Image (cartoon, rainbow, N blue to C red; front, side, top):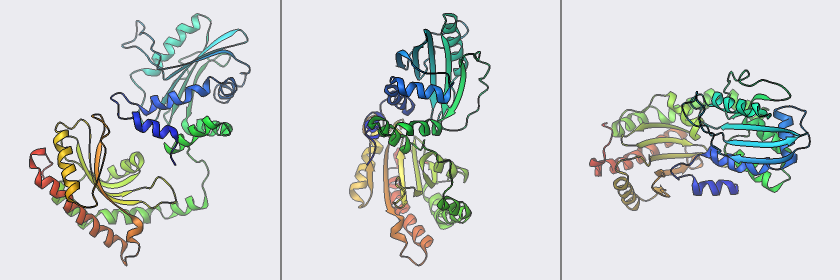
Length: 358
């Protein structure tokens, strides 16, 4: 069962200005209003001097008007203010999941904090990322009394938050973070080691599934596939190992294996086309896809929820289905070619929708 936060984000994620980073920030804000958790957080990631706090306030997406040397306004993901021993503190937190730092973003934040320091605040800048993203930020603020700049990764925040998993709200946040892959395990299990030892064999088998006659059929029907390195990008970002290409006008075709969300489930072999909301002939494509699914059993249309959402047409088959065959790879290849040929009918029957030349 998915986290309640997953369900809420699925409702709002297709809005024009949606950002999972902003959504996650809003989720964390109520926890930081709790003195116990904020003291623990500051001790863990900033300085161990922190203890009792008063007048805690938490703001999200708060805008600071640009300074004379800035090209734009600044809007940290989270701003926290509190008093400790009659000293006021202000904390800027910027979190990143997949995106990188904006235009001089951290330096702009540091400049604003320096202005706050002139008024007597102790100031802190925290930069939290999913991936290792080293920044030369140590000199942006003077490090004194715990003030200064600090970097951490989301897995470190996750491990800290696990201390509060008895709290129902925190437990839901933890569950949601696990769904986003922010709970990186720092210990290898025997199963992990076995997988590492066999990773070259597994990758070779996956490439065999997608190579040879499947690649030949794919390029004959839909044009040149993206380079092999795209498979690694797709695996990292989308949890799938696929052949993939751009059919022009924000339409994309692919085939391969999608990893299951739950470890006990099997991956799915999938043939699919996905359409970005920026597609210029979106309504025409959607109508054609809808008609195709009605005429071809087993093909499913997922989405769109609204005008700003992607939609995908796919034919999916559990990997378990192929394990009774004598030659698993041959069976998977036959299936993919058959379904790619079916999907090509959509292209053939709708030539005016702008397709990549095969």
